[in-house]
Amino acid sequence: MNPDIIFYNGSFKGAGTFDKKVSAVAIKNKRFVKFGSDKEVLALKSSATKVIDLKGKVVIPGLNDSHIHLIRGGLNFNMELRWDGVTSLNDALFMLKEQASRTPAPQWVRVVGGWNEFQFKEKRMPTLDEINAVSKDTPVFILHLYDRALLNKAALNAVGYDKNTKEMPGTSIQRDKEGNPTGMLIASPNAIILYSALAQGPKLNKDDQVNSTLHFMRELNRLGVTSVVDAGGGFQNYPEDYEIIDELNKQNKLSVRIAYNLFTQRPGHELEDFQNWTKTSDYQQGNEYYRHNGAGEMLVFSAADFEDFLQPRPDLPSGMESQLEPVVRLLAQNNWPFRLHATYDESISRALNVYEKINSDIPIDKINWFFDHAETISDQSIERVKKLGGGIAIQNRMAFQGEYFIERYGKDKTLRTPPIAKILEAGIPVGMGTDATRVSSYNPWLCLYWLTTGKSIGGAQLYGEENIISREKAIELYTKGSAWFSNEADKKGAFVENQLADLAVLSKDFFTVEDEEIKNIYSVMTVVGGDVVHASDEFTSLNPPLPPVSPDWSPIKFYGTYGQNKIILNAPAHHFHCVAHHEKHSHGLNYNFGCFCWAF
Image 1 (cartoon, rainbow, N blue to C red):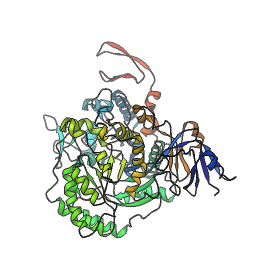
Image 2: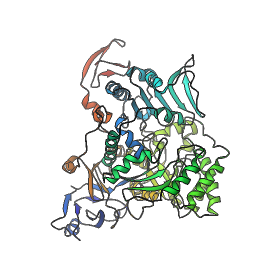
Image 3: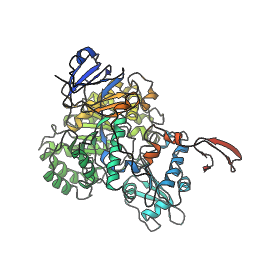
Image 4: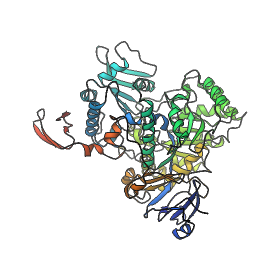
């Protein structure tokens, strides 16, 4: 057999090996060729075979995020200040002030998703006064989930908002008594105002976008992610915004497998977009690292509901069906899979009416079509999805918005948002993901924590035992389950011979650690196609080189990434006197939250 590489002395736990004792695997030509005991697999090695000792670590199939925005996220990763995993608003505000001081004009400081107020020990949002205090001249833009954005005065000037600025439909601009914008933009519930304001900020140059994308992929690798389905996104234009990822693919520099969906960008011209794309793009064109995956998550803008649980559920326009039907019919005629953003059952049931009508003419049960999100899907809609052969891609948005849902709809309705156990019982394909980066963090372990404990990141108990799944099932859904959503269930996601050799070696045993420890798990070695794409801790010597973070002012360079807590390491201890409170403070971060004052 002459394997290219053998990993041994591990504990392989995933679909294909859960009921077996497997400690080693042989890989050849980027695929698994033999699982077994150390003795069985090491007997296959030749003089050319590379051999790596896993040091008794737990190994899982590489995680596969079935709904993430990697392509858009990669273009922006290095210029965004991430509050993902920051546990104190104090720390977050300190980071904001430091970053504002080093960010050159005309760039902005941007905090774009991946956090919420409940992760902070203070259990509150920053105020506009606090946002304005960190910077007078550098624009600061902070996006909180899909509900609001906070802009300092410099950012308001940069986007040109004043008392004459008109609100877009379904949005609002908070104003003072004189009618001037205060700096808070509100999705009520349409989030377009948030994205359109953010889109006005400067972009990175091409070289920095390449660097940023490389670092974002490596960060995903660090957390055990080897594959994703990119769901497109607002202001992510095809093919312009795909040029960087396409170039990296041609250079064989992708460390994450990407299946990408095409997301319409022009309200009122959706059918025209898909008519053009079905003529110029072929479904599954590409390779095992970068391939086309069909249409969505936006098929027509009128079919999109907005999951801002601080706002009442929106009713879709009465003419939605007449716009959705020709698009889905076109996709079915071209055998293109499609996905649709749908939060509420009211939206799902109306879309299903369209799908069932089309299915009577053009069967869609063999096309891997699916709904995204589906937080309030009903039992009746679940059965309708099952009959049409569809799937449901689930993300941990409730881990970030569960408290808001409880406040609006009550604890009883929260118990099945979404009804994961019921969906699985129906035999519907389920894949897991994060919807990163504008709502949830890109950290898959937060999703796995939510899935197996039923808790939000703020600690609220959202679900009872009846809607909580086992850790083994959770890993299966995040690997083998997600592979269905790119029509690759026979190629990856399981520890099965001839599947793509993607795996993650865990820092801790996910299957036995205490619940709260799940959120802190990472991968000490990640392998894609038999190649080590990330290594740390005892495997650091195997870590592939990565160019330094650029540009020089990038927040990633100073604060690191999820869970690295570089802010604590970088900030010197300092004693100062807070005149407002007439007391002394000693803080490693050089400030006092109570009166929001710094001494540096």
